[in-house]
Length: 163
Image (tube, rainbow, N blue to C red; front, top):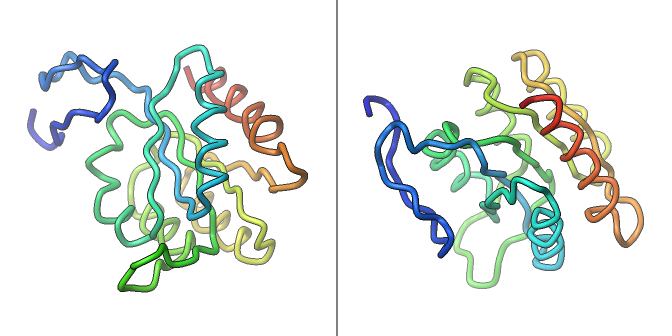
């Protein structure tokens, strides 16, 4: 398994081993700091027929540090921009733009959804990623159920397109 990290998801239904044949792309990576949104993303992902596993980061640097490890299994990345520190956090959580800049240095691996309400910085993230060849879509957090409606519909569409 040269160059591919081997890891097990903390999911009781995930029975994969660590050989190269067992790598299945069915992972959604999310950068988000809001607990309610995270619960809504996880609930929405359960409505997708392939039942993707959702991995969430609350801060940009940790996501950057771990991202390459997960890329072989990723079907979609969804990024927020503005991040608030988690209780007890000892460092600044950074921003989604930092993750987008890092991802722009990597070969495109899957579609990306930008789900931030920060209109100006979303376009900075968009430009970083699209100029590097990533497929990028925008889903604005508008309304109470935007994750269960707009975001989920966009995810379904992207997963169909990128089978």
